[in-house]
Image (cartoon, rainbow, N blue to C red; front, side):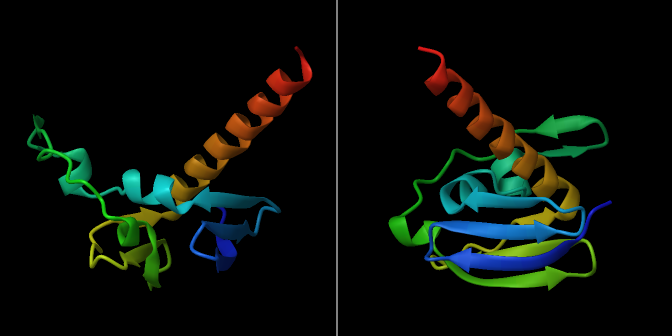
Length: 116
């Protein structure tokens, strides 16, 4: 499993992560917040029964700005947002999947833009 070698916040717009497998991904902050991997956002499954999450709260603009990023063990980061929200823990494998998603998405846009 790849590990990050550098995590850098760029002007409250995106998080850039350089991975030890040679990949570098840019993660828009709005995407990271909206996809926060916590039970309140995604719901929970307990003993095979899924409990839906509560209705989505509207996020204020400062909710898309990062106050601080802290490591969680050797496998994840926790992001504290400026509106105080800090429930999402982002494991490396999830961040890698998010990065691959954005890479494919960006490449698809380029391909479509060139084939009018």
